[in-house]
Length: 254
Ligand code: PGA
Image 1 (tube, rainbow, N blue to C red):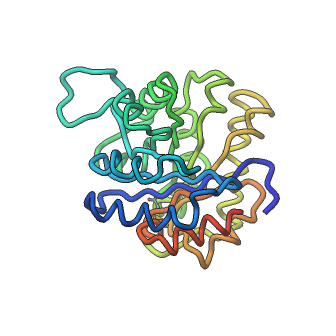
Image 2 (tube, rainbow, N blue to C red):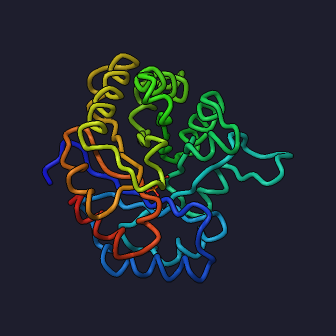
């Protein structure tokens, strides 16, 4: 696939896999993708498996990401981890503001914004997630919701900082439900997000930032979604828990 931006496919393993299972899955993915240069491949296991997975993928082109972090550098924040701690385990990416974090753990755009800034300061690439609920889509509020989330989550970032971000558009109604946005529905929102980036910074930033689609992406629909001009990759949940389907999605992005 001839793309303006290098595709990026990330596996969000969520709260799945013990250390032993994570090592198995990472090994399965590594077998096929160790030398993959056409697509940025990122594995985001739970915190408990970061070290083990980093050992499996060391020396390959596969990168490591975390699923969350705190914005402070250190301190009395029981249960949290800092950006520096993730860097120490060789993470290059961190997923921020996933809809599950927003809905179950009360993360607001303001919190996501603090985390995004802290990630960039620590040299981690944030994967900033945005997406509307079914109610919001059916109420005709998709664009308003997305605009508020993008502006709020990326508030105060310079052009140089904006290009260090990856954005993931994940319609909440498509996450883990088997319902995928049609490629045109996804493309429309991706293009809309690019317009917001142009307004926040300039055309070059809008053209450079990679925007992933997430929400029931699987081998059967990946190619069509990824063929859209403004879809630069995928953030994969369920289909990332099995090596075969994750590898097939990455291949669809090549
Ligand atoms: P899904 O999850 O692929 O299982 O829909 C995507 C995500 O939540 O990142």
